[in-house]
View 1: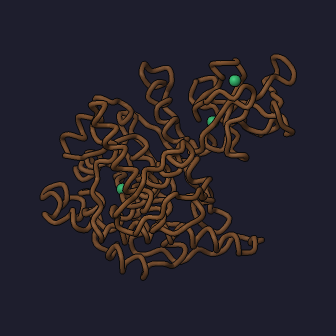
View 2: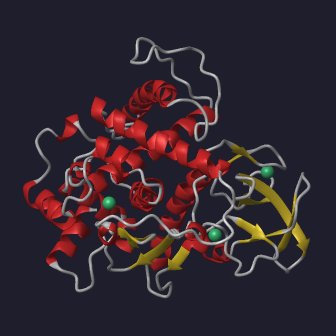
View 3: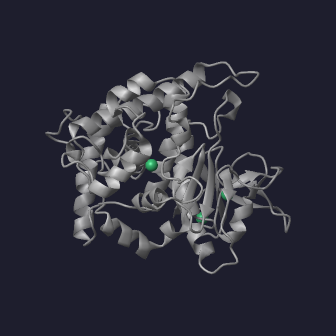
Length: 391
Ligand SMILES: [Zn+2]
Ligand SMILES: [Zn+2]
Ligand SMILES: [Zn+2]
C-alpha cells in the first residue's frame, strides 16, 4: 500500500478516508490512478465532483459510499454507479437486519485491500473474454466461506471479531483475519487463471503435489485426523497440508500478505537492516515496485528483517506477534512459485494480442467442478459443515 497524503493540504491520510481531518477536503480512491485523490463538488447536490490539484475527468463516489462501505470513485457517467471493487459484488446482505451493515462494512474494507493489490499486480478481475471466469463476491448470512467458479462466498459471521477469535483458538491457528480469508479465496480463483487455464499443471504439481487427489476426502481427513506431524517443514500453515489446492491458496494468501506489507513498509520508510541473513543483505535497499519488479530473493531479503522488527514492535505494545509464522525452505519454494506464476502471467498478458472473440478455454481438469474448495454442494452435507469450520 502506498503512503497517501491529502492532495490539498499534505496531511497524511489513510486509504479508507473520505475526508481529510485537517482541511476537510473530500477524498476518494481512484482505481484508475491507484491513489487517494481530493475532489470538490462540480455542481452542488448532483454528486458530481472535480479533481482538486490536477487535471482529470469528473467523478462520483461509488454507490456504496452512502452505506459507509466504500470510498472509491467511478467516472461521473459510469453505468450502475458502482466502483471497480463494488462492481464485483454479486450479493450483499440484507442491510435492514441489525448487525449486517457493520459486518459488511468490515468485509468491504478488507475486500478493497485485496482488490488494490490485485490491480497493482496487474492481475485480471475478469477473464470471461478468454473463456474464463469473472471474480465475484457473495456476502451471505449463514453460508459457507469458499470459492466456486469465480464466486467467493464469505460468511458474514467472519466479520464478528469475537467469533473469529473463538474459531482461531479452536483450530489452533496463529492468524485469522477477514483479509486473510479474502486473499485465500482469491487464490482459488487465480489458480484457475494462472495454473488451469494457462496449462501449468506439471510445473504446479512438481511443487505443490497432485490436486487430483480426492478433495472432499482430503478435507475430511484433515478435519478428523489433523495435519501430518511434519506439516511445518513443508507448508506455510497447517491447513495448507490438507490438499494441494489449499496449499496453493494458503501460499497465495501468504505471498499477498508479504508483498502488501513490504510495499507499505517501503512507502512508510521502514527498512530494517538485514545483516547476516539468508540471502546476503545489501544495504541500503533501493525502492522498487514490489508488485512488478525485482526477484523473489530480493523481496525475501527485505521481508525477514521487517517481520522481526514488527514482531518486536508488537511485543513492545503487548500485542501478539505481527507475523506469527516460520517459513520452512519447502514453503519458500512454493512462495517463489506463486511469485513467478504472477509475473509470468502478467508478462504474457502484456505481450499477447487482444482476442477478437472468446477463446475456447483449456479443458478443465477432473477436479474443475471440485475447484470449489470450501463451498459445500447443495444440501449441506456434514462435509459442508466441516468445510465451514475449517475455513
Ligand atoms: Zn487536507
Ligand atoms: Zn465501491
Ligand atoms: Zn481454500
